[in-house]
Each structure stands twice: as C-alpha cells, then as structure tokens.
Image (tube, rainbow, N blue to C red; front, side, top):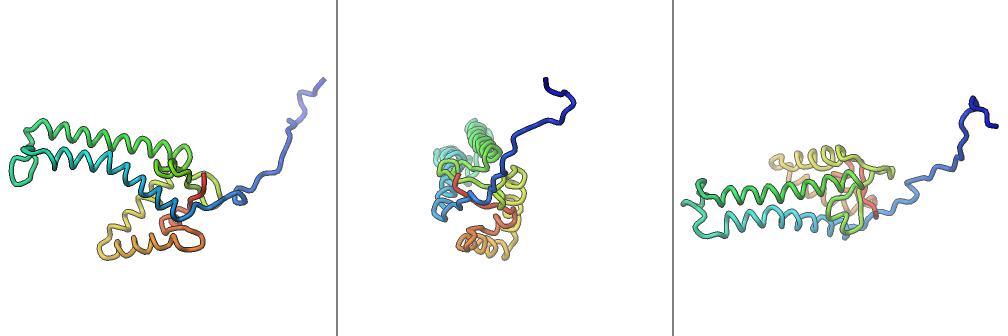
Length: 173
C-alpha cells in the first residue's frame, strides 16, 4: 500500500546541455534561405503588382497613374493583399513553431537563442527585424549599417549584427 502523504517520486535524468549540440548553419545556406525568402515574397507580392499595374495595356488613365474607376485596381489590390497575407501567415506560423522563415524551413536551418533555447516571435520581429530595419532606414548611416551588418557573417560566430541585437544564432535544424 502506498502512502498518500508521501512526497512524489520521479526518475530524474541529467539535463542535457543544449549548447553542446548546436551546429551553426554555414554562410551559403543562410544566404540561400534569404534568397528563397526574397523569391517567394517577390512571387507573391511584387510580381502580381508588376503584372497587374505595370504590364496590362490600357490600365492607366494617363501619366502612368492607375485609373481608380477601373475594376482592375481593386482586383490588383486584392491579389497583392492576398499574397502578402499568405506570406505573413506562413512566416509567422513557421517562426512561432520552430524559429524558421519559409526559406529556412526549406533549407533545413532555424533560428535559436545563443544558448540554444527556442526563440520567441516577439524577439524575432522586434529585435531582429523591426529594430534592424529601423536602423537601416536612417539617412547616410543606414546603408553603412546594412553593409556592416551583412559583413559580420564572416566572423567566427557567424552572427550578423541583427543576430547580435536579438541574441540569436542560425543553426542546422
């Protein structure tokens, strides 16, 4: 008969060290994931915008401006909005689930904190993307920051400045 007032018993195993299993993603794979993300975003947003607003003859009312009375303006805006919404939905769900963008998921890499723990959507959005983008649009300083940010990939830690800002690393999934 077991004692109902006894403390609970459980099997305790050693806690694994997540930093011991981390394998950093190589620079080429990171670049490829960035290119895949850019191509997917372009296919879903920029390409429909170009095809609808730039390539259809007779679409503009004059001087290259879209005719607001044309039904194509509404259809074009809806197609672009749908593509952007689809891209956001997939990206947000993949980042929340495993720290991956669409390109990172396809190429088998993911984003984690520098100690190997999972990364939150808020950290990725605010620190890694929003703050980095905000710094990047500062006149004169922004382009220089963006160049330095990209060149930091060649350090031993393979962390760009946006990775350092968010305390993240990119590893093999």
